[in-house]
Length: 199
Ligand SMILES: Cc1cc2nc3c(=O)[nH]c(=O)nc-3n(C[C@H](O)[C@H](O)[C@H](O)COP(=O)(O)O)c2cc1C
Image (cartoon, rainbow, N blue to C red; front, side, top):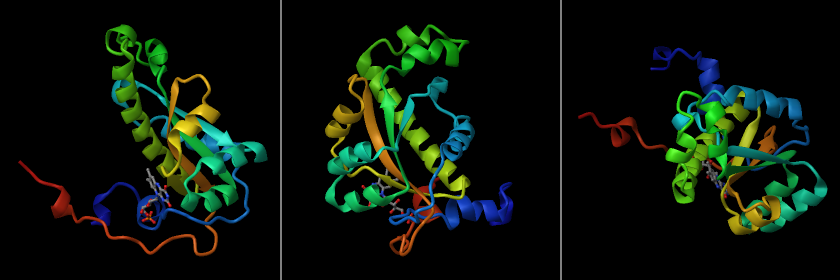
């Protein structure tokens, strides 16, 4: 079935079939240039009303890394301490301020649709979560492995890393070249017929 797709088989492997969630990494650094190239690719992936609520914090200093590791669940501490780069991915709950420039044919959406905080928090979190998925695929497109995690003290991360109260962490992602014994055995995936129905 792979020849049905427009994407060549090697790229299919790189992004999906052979890409794995890494739990260990080599020491090879991940540069800002790589992250910028990833962002400049995945920023084109779609969201509702072209909203762009995702914010990415690159945790580069030893001091910030230590604060983050303290807030990770025990099973996630070691890999977060040792990955070449760790990124905190969050929703900006004030994303609607950018809608007039990012969705110019409906500038009224900023207030008419997203004036109420609970409405924009729900829409922003959903769409930023989509962007988290795009980001992970972008990491793979750069020839790197991602180790996304949601096992952490979210309230603690929001307090430590987003002091304005306007952000909500969605995932912490370790990024780098996979190290020794980087993955657990591949778990099964649901088959097409278990997931897709036609009406
Ligand atoms: C949103 C998200 C949250 C995750 N949280 C954790 C986590 O807290 N700790 C962990 O060890 N793995 C975590 N994982 C890793 C998943 O278990 C892993 O991606 C999945 O089992 C697929 O593994 P594979 O890519 O090796 O097939 C998370 C993955 C995602 C996408």
